[in-house]
Length: 173
Image (cartoon, rainbow, N blue to C red; front, side):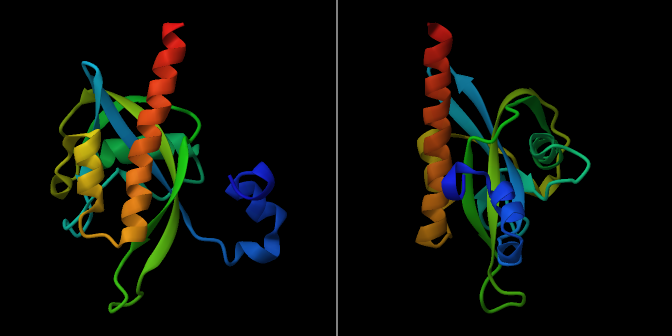
């Protein structure tokens, strides 16, 4: 949420003169599965292969953001499942390095939770989808990243665990 409890998109529309300064938007599928009492997260290698991330990419104008995130999970990790229609978290992500053009670019990532039902195995081969416990996912996501972005990625896992714990408690009532 942006200013005054409105979404980033609404804020950009409401403030057209500021939208040219807005960060580009991408969508991410935060894929998870329950293993007994714990939750595991599915991470994929980045395009360069040096870091791990959630399946993510640019939204498609012809589909909802949640469906675009679901498509990324299929393309990058070869998984299908139930994706929540509303994002549960926004985070900042960087791409590139300052010494190579176009330099470091920041993106706002809209994160959607997706419980994995099917692992097909047909995915982009260099992505190497791998399951991690919440603690291992946080450590793995932090590797090779500046502290600012490492904390952003770790917060996604914390918020997901929080969100899933609250949902489970509500379902038990």
